[in-house]
Length: 167
Image 1 (cartoon, rainbow, N blue to C red):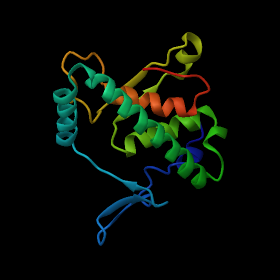
Image 2 (tube, rainbow, N blue to C red; image 1 turned 180 degrees about the vertical axis):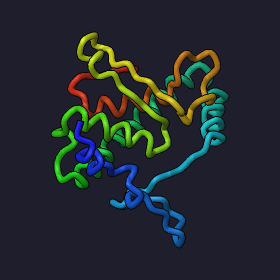
Image 3 (spheres, rainbow, N blue to C red; image 1 turned 30 degrees about the vertical axis):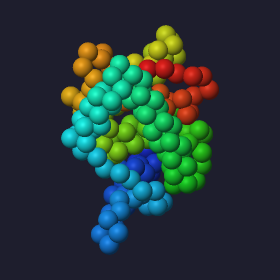
């Protein structure tokens, strides 16, 4: 893996990439995309409101929200990173794509994520390990997975995949 090459692709964690305009109160990327920072209390309230209002359908609502956010995030990643790298993200080598995806995930406060792409090729299942998720402790009781984060992963991965993937 070429570390210098990956460092040059460090768009999302580059300190010049995200800025805060004190005058307008806006957090945005260098390319002008507005960002929204939310804390765990907000997430807990959002999930709680979904459960309260939708009951058993809350899981599907959160999964759908995650997918939508993931698709938009991936499209933004593809556009902004492509402009930064001066080539399409789809032309990246797999190690480059993995590096920028993990960096984006961390830079946007979604935790540290690792993908076992080799297992995906061999078994048709891509094991994913997520640490320090902002959704840790913010989930639907008795739900075996975090629906919002599963949807987010689905949205991002499906944006770049030729096949439909599910989490």
